[in-house]
Image (cartoon, rainbow, N blue to C red; front, side):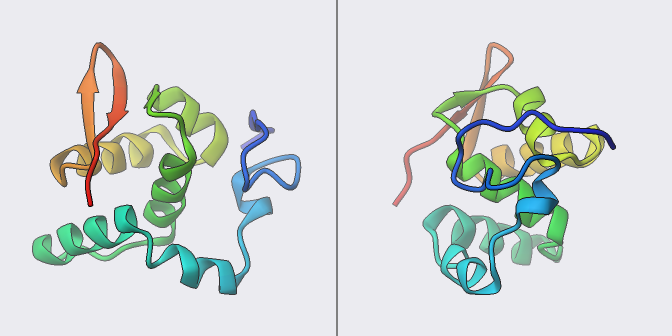
Length: 111
């Protein structure tokens, strides 16, 4: 899929797609314990759906995004298809982790 727009985010260590800058396995285990990831995983288990690598990438990107962001920003960073990004963002809204307001996604406070 071509080059992606990367900013000075923690995962942006290499130029190109997010997959080229995937965190190490050790970092993934640390990410597995973040509150956003835990809440989303519980939501998926209740629905009988697996946490696939594309979903994992997208939720990690969302966790580093500013409080308000657009879906196109996630698409540019993740180098995933629009459908999987929009589907995952919809699931994050349904899980109560994001709100959709005026075309922008807003992170919700949770504990």
